[in-house]
Length: 180
Ligand SMILES: [Mg+2]
Ligand SMILES: [Zn+2]
Image (cartoon, rainbow, N blue to C red; front, side, top):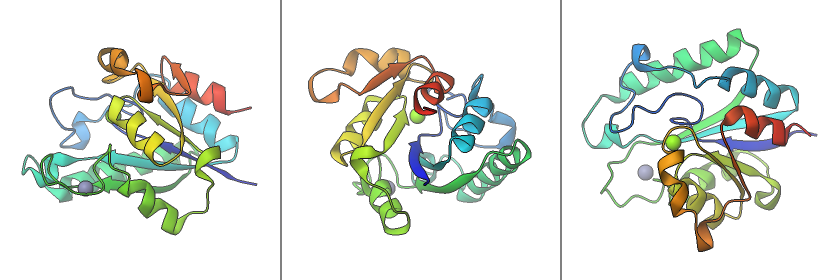
C-alpha cells in the first residue's frame, strides 16, 4: 500500500534564497542530501506531494512561466534519479492577497485531498517554517520540522500549538525517520 508524504519545496528540497525567490533554474540548488532523501521516500513507497507558497508570482516579482520552467526542470532531475513525485500544489497568490491556500492556510492540502487518498492523521508534512507546522496541524497532519532553509531561525517559534511531531536537521534525516 502506498502512503502519502507532503514536502515543502524551498528550504527543504532546494536551498531557500532567504529574502528572495527562486526565479529561474540557475538559482535552483538542491539541498545537500535532498535527492538521496527523495529516493529513499520513493523506494519506501511514499507518494510524494510537493506543497509550496510562491507569492513572488502574485506580488509581481517573477513570472508564472518561470515558476513552471523551474518546476519542470526539478521534475526532470528527479526523474533522472528515479524519484517519483505524485503531485505538486503551489499557491501563487501574493502575501497579502488573503487567499485560502497560502500556508498557514490549508487550501493546498484541501486541493490535494480532492485528488489523492490519504488519512491526514497518518500523513506527514515536512517543512522549514513555523507556518508550515501551523498549516499541517490545522489540517490534522503529522509534522516534521527541518532546520535547513528558514528552519534554524524559525525553530524558537515552535512553542505551544506549534510543537511539531519531530524536529530534524534536514530532509535526509526526515527520510530516515519515515523509511521504517
Ligand atoms: Mg520552505
Ligand atoms: Zn493562495
